[in-house]
Image (cartoon, rainbow, N blue to C red):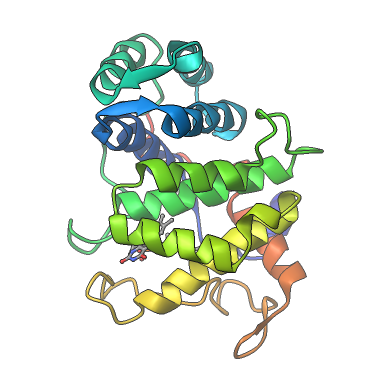
Length: 257
Ligand code: FAD
């Protein structure tokens, strides 16, 4: 894998701190925004926690225990308030901390000013990391039989705080038939295409960080073999690139103490 990283010249790092910031914000802030978590929402939360246990690249073993005890909190419940979930997150966090506790300054997702990038960037990064990790498994069906892509869909639909984004994501999931995607590699490519569609829509938007312009990813500079022509990709090369960019071996631990 190291030599592949060299071949692909992956300057495009994956930062543990960004992944942990995202997890922190998701569990402490975004999920607790729901007043009551039951039914479909609770199912989405349980499957999300399962996927995190399975695929989140924890830095310390304690991080895995933290996610497992959090899952035990909700496992046998038929409902939990957002407030109670948050309290439980805080109690468990103190005992079984992740490497990085609390929100730190973003690295890969740092905006040129604080109103740009940050958490939404972190969430995409987390989603790509999870689909990539799942593709490393022989089959991605042991998380309550829900493939990672469907768990991501459940998270976005039930918890993502950006309402416009949720509507767009749901439309795109229907149009691009998310529920018909099978297999790890197909899931990686589905999410890559979906993300590029969002990038295209947001090019020139007021939310675009002027110092981090939206591109059709990956750039030619980072992956010269990925693009065949202006709008044609070599999907095998893209898949190879994504599997390196979002792999554990590409994680940079800068800022983690
Ligand atoms: P981001 O687009 O957040 O990307 C983060 C990082 O991922 C990039 O820096 C790059 O390293 C990598 N990357 C970029 N493209 C790809 C790709 N195709 N495949 C793999 N990796 C890639 N904002 C809106 O205004 N409207 C919306 O409808 C909307 N929908 C969203 C839906 C979802 C599910 C999410 C998570 C976010 C959405 N956002 C939306 C937020 C928006 O997409 C960006 O996250 C935000 O504008 C910050 O952009 P960014 O420049 O940090 O890069």
